[in-house]
Amino acid sequence: MLYLETRGRGPRLVLVHGFTQTGRSWGRAGDLLAARHELVTLDAPGHGRSAAIEAGLADGADLMAAAVRTTGGPATWLGYSMGGRFALHVAWRHPDLVERLVLVSASAGIDDPAERARRRDSDDLLARRIEQEGKEQFLEWWLAQPLFATLPTGAAGVHERLEGPASGWASSLRRAGTGTQEPLWGRLRELAMPVLVIAGGLDHKYRDLARRIGRETGPNATVVILEGAGHACHLERPDEFADVVGTWLRP
Image 1: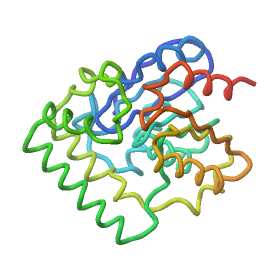
Image 2: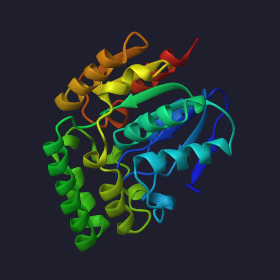
Image 3: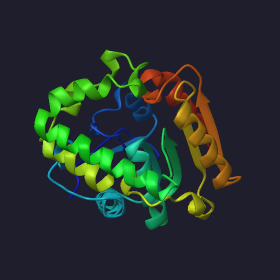
């Protein structure tokens, strides 16, 4: 079973982290949310204390649902980047568990089959790099990518990310990378629960994806762009992020 931790009291909120992170990677945003919610933080397959578990997006979503059921009933699910893609799959496969859905810097997949194939090849090359270099060297390179140019070093949570063997990250890329995901844009209208979509204004690609998710989901979707923030907007602007989520969750 996937590793998870719970803390705080109040309405349940499940947090699903991004690639290279763990359930302990939510920083100040997590602390602020825990002040008003019962937080359930998962280690996704291939990460942290779930590093030995290999799973794709669909079977990984099933594992997440099974783990969360052991701690209680329905909850709001909040996923960042890779975690957003997992949370989308949970919402479709286990809608009884998802009262509300929050997607942060997330995508519903790559439309073009040729582009998806190229992304799979690219992710496989990254997986090989991890296996050859090890986690520390790869993570230094990963966090130096333009995607994280606005993420302060102190907010990156490097120590938490390094838990577990390198093989877990490699498996995650090959099994749950964006290139493995069948595009789900045509199914967004099936989401019956309220959906909040958040992205950083400086992260142009995911800002545009957030707006597309909002349009294609329909009137139950709310889109918020955090201006001046990048891909890891929840780590860059934790107070503003927690305020947006908390306000949206209040009755």
